[in-house]
Length: 478
Image (cartoon, rainbow, N blue to C red; front, side, top):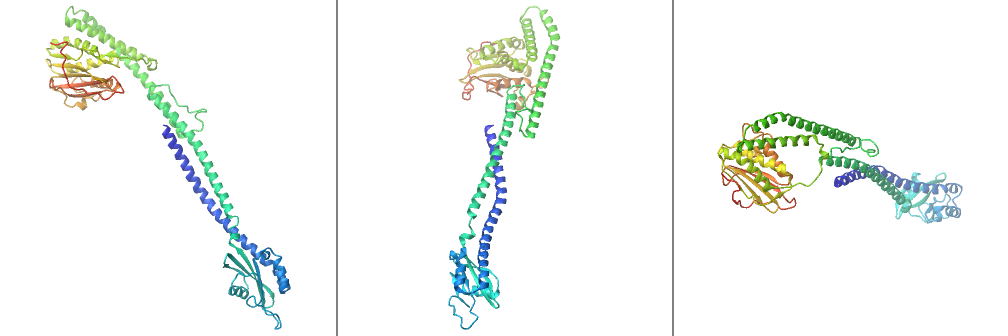
């Protein structure tokens, strides 16, 4: 469940990071490009202002000394980034200029003479690329028919000034948004995971037998849980209530059905008392008494709340129980002319099951032999002990199992009329409660059916190996 919680929270965090990143990129990248374009436009606008600042001076005079002083008074001129291309002199006796086409050039010029001539001839401003940046060429009318050209140099650094800082700020904002989304997603994921863990813990507790467990659907613990998980918790609580009701109804039904058996049991007890003396009469009275005890035990167990049953360690001796039950069935075997043999039950073999449950299991196995084989069919019971398991083998000389898989299915039966199929299912559940198993096969000695019941004595042991079957001599034998 912890792995599920971590995976769910990581999934929410990754989804939040992916969504926030896409949103941040969708907005911040265009914003960064806009900042870069704004810086470029700002640099050229500043250059245009610098060029326009010389317009009044050129309109008044074209004297080189005066223009040089005006040029030096500007920011760009003071930095050596500005030049003025004057027009050619209007009078023949004017001083010839040697600095540019058509007239002298004041300042440091970077644009080509052809570009300057184009700007002056067309009367419009434009920019040209020069080493280290761009040059803005701004034509200014001096008088009728003459035009001067103001050149302003814009360095590459001016075009990107502040852009790096803007990108850093925008990146920080994006990271901040992602971090906030991660925190929110983690907090939401924590609430969802906590709700899911409460639901899973309640399910495990219910599976372990705690019928009183419920999942809170209101209050502080359920606050912040998604509506779907609250609905799942409500459905779980409804299911748990229904399970409790069904179990109570089942216990009542079992108690009522068992109580109805008291009347025919009373009649059987009275009839058995009138049988007189003899082995058959004693065996009948003993069977009736045991049946009455079993019915009383069923009634008491059904009326008792499962939560009130104390968890105590139980155990019994397989050899002792097998000897007792085989001795009980031996009287009926003698009456029916059945040869039988018991081997391996001469030493203690403890197993972690209740004595009554093991006795009922042995009775079910032997009862199948008497119920599903012909009168006079021989049978045998072997007890084998290993380091980790105790194996009880019940074989007979009958026809065997026609379909062993169907015989193990609860309620289907395998012996024709009068078979419910519950006996072997009860035996299988007892074996599985210890970590063992139940197997059906064919007896290697008698040739008929063989039932192999394996009860584990050490849960952490290695799988038991039945080994070689051997007879220790019959304790009871006809």
